[in-house]
Length: 328
Image (cartoon, rainbow, N blue to C red; front, side, top):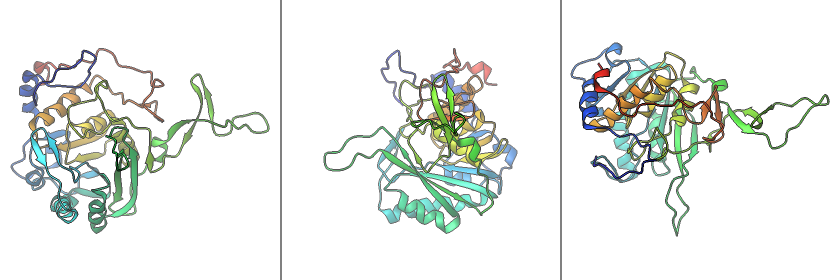
């Protein structure tokens, strides 16, 4: 990744050569069948098709998958090229079918896509699992189009191995401003609370998510990965579909968001990523999570409508440069 000219206000996380050299020593490369302890809280720097062969069976409670969408995209020099729907479906199945073995009987699966990928995702998911829902979330980034609608949404398909699965609805309620603050005959608030910041109520989350902010240059979680997901998005999924101590696997880890949020929320994790730089960024973010457990847009067990000034607890002086001698 070539070094870019950045503003002093730019908080995008980068690696020094020294950090990359040190952090690369923490990465795992599987060469023989592994047990759960071998991959526990590790980043596997390896091609997925090779790594799958050595993963243990039946150890994953939550599988989060954010594969390359059916678009032409460059991932730090590794190009993914758009293909026909049928070819993309075949590509998905080539590795998805091999991941089935890692799941526990009560596991949940989430897989990301856009409108061009969702047809293939639906086709593959229903072959192996019970599809429960499709979440659509607003991605405010996106280029306008003169002869089409601006593409500013993505999908997340939710499925389970069977009908017994984890779903913690109380952990993912959304704090919304009250437009009409009704009271009962005694003048008491009906299902809302008054705070110094206004009137709010906790609502059940729907499958339309409009409260996310895609990471950008002024956010400390931002990296140069072109399709990085918000930590808040992962927090919703992890809190809803896993419990403390559960095991979460991300086979397309990218710059590490799934592992980082899992660590912040007290879960175990493993991520697979073939790019060395992204893998090292994941490890750097995991080191930083030792100092900072905060997730923008989530505070005191509540998700806010949008990442806003309402989230007040800030952790200051988080080092961006991890000292290599402290890693071992």
